[in-house]
Length: 109
Image 1 (cartoon, rainbow, N blue to C red):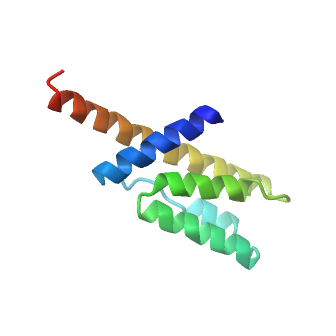
Image 2: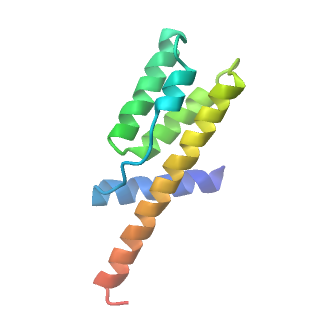
């Protein structure tokens, strides 16, 4: 878990500095699995969707962890959360790798 948080933090810096990212993540499965949930849960899902839309994957992952810690989640909801976390982490890692490559080129390495 500590390594995941380190990757997230590094990704936050990279994404914030570069403004880059891919628009390949869909929150439709998450939104569908929480449709009809209480208003606090709906607000969390909307915050996640907004963060993904803005390519703020670190914020999305943080909110997904909070949502995932709730009791009484269905298997479908748990799977949707896990899937979205994995997708967001891949986006963060891709952005970090891209930025590292750009920095290597800029430094002539």
